[in-house]
Image (cartoon, rainbow, N blue to C red; front, top):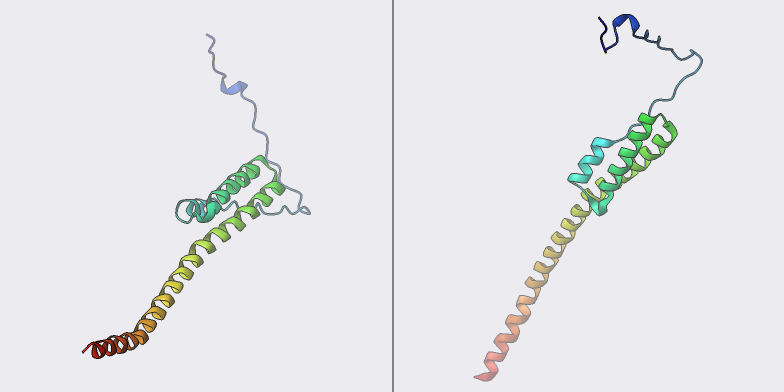
Length: 131
């Protein structure tokens, strides 16, 4: 009785894992910043920097899985820079815009208060001349 699937006796034995030599220190794998990039793409896509960060994060993850640590480190660095710029732009620019609007409203209200006296004087003077 022959079966089409391999039997346990014929399966190759798993190879033992090799440990790195004690003198050789491997550098830690670079972070890909994928979660931060997704957040910036969905919520804070300032000048499409969130999308660029997402693309670099995916490239960094692909290179890390492929084993190319140096390319993964470069893409990770680019993703981090894009994420920092997207976050800073999305937080700083609305705060700057709000500050400009508030100072503009304050300035216009002071200007309106100062000009009320001028217009009142002009209108009252014009009324007395007509009588």
